[in-house]
Length: 414
Image (cartoon, rainbow, N blue to C red):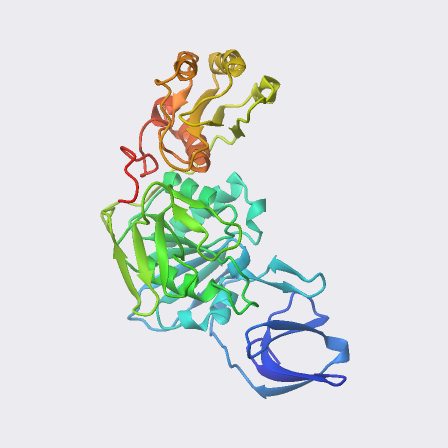
């Protein structure tokens, strides 16, 4: 028997029927029940009968180097599925009862048969980690992989990524990669063993977006709690704003730039952006990783800045228009004098920093702090890593919009 077979499993007086799923251990069977939930069964205590073979089957070949190719129709576009791990590419470890990242891209196609017939797929695994373990080094590996896939002829790329740090990785790739085709990040708030999982719709909509005419780095996730539309967010303007809702991701300061209708399979955009083929493929993967994101809180000891003496850059989440306590300013001035780029962002979700309104802000500017406008703190962190490694004047670049991360003015909901 193989994953994808429909089976009947008897264990004592309990009988279950369902589809056999991949298991994280050789000692357990994983069966997806008709209601959508998965059940883990100790293999040694179970009698198994195969009722139907290959209920879910995707033909493919393994290239031996962590990649696979799944072909459906030569007339369809080619989409590269790149897996980094996360809930969309995860299963339940019935040894521990926890969700763990396990699937490679080919397994995702088995788990989401709705993807069949939409494109020819190439699959590769860059990492197999939950997103809290993501690092700038993996961002670089991912950017290299995306570049290679596009160079090899992919008409679009879908990156499967854990949702917790997706906004960091997506924004980092937006700075590192000039792309002539869509690069679409997607993930899942709820694992595939749950009936309320969002993995199928998010994956399908991401593939539809990857074959669209928009050529930039996007994030594709549920627009609402219903299974009807996925929102398309610009990678540098998106933020995860809820821990568990399926519509956790929001574009800050505006509406999402596009949407994918799940029922009609149509992709639409409400704002202009780079079109397919108009940008030459290019990669600038260098990053200066000695950058910290620091959130100011009332009464915070300025000694918190002492560990930043050797940092190349610091992004500060200040209050309101971009403020910190007065007793921080001398310490910040010392950091700047020693060569550290200090960029100011705001803890507020809407609006931009402006350090010319109050005395504190003016003193910060005199100390050498750079205003990052309405750039999101997470995006500003990735941007500062990139500009320090790729721009002659990274401080000036932090005040410029490079890939849509800094809106020209704050006009909400346009």
